[in-house]
Image (cartoon, rainbow, N blue to C red; front, side):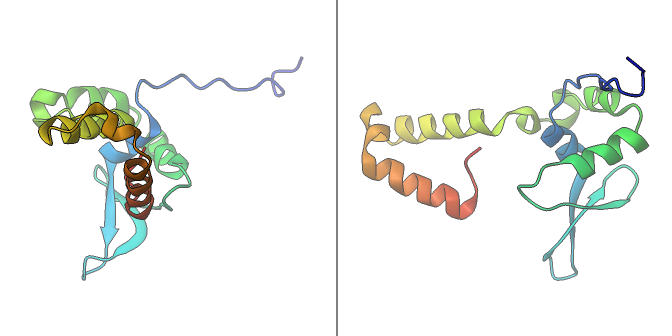
Length: 133
């Protein structure tokens, strides 16, 4: 088979696209603090379009093309340097931790999460504020 037909295999990054985008980009806001739909690269200042819920391809492709050593830079920003592990915690794990904290600190029975009303209201809240991962 000709090499032009063979699929290219990109090396698997140890960071998710969301982690890469969160590390390198921040929202570009108007003077009033309103979102513009753009993200600005913290490393070079270039702006890229970002629409929520459509993925991070545009942002990650910028990082891959303009910041060759991005994985090494992310590795160097260890928990000791940044003071927190929060950027590396997956949203699903964070949500589970929040549920458990709510139940334990509220002294609620574990069956609380099985109640239909609890699940319904938490789902409505999560949908309204986009908090579930």
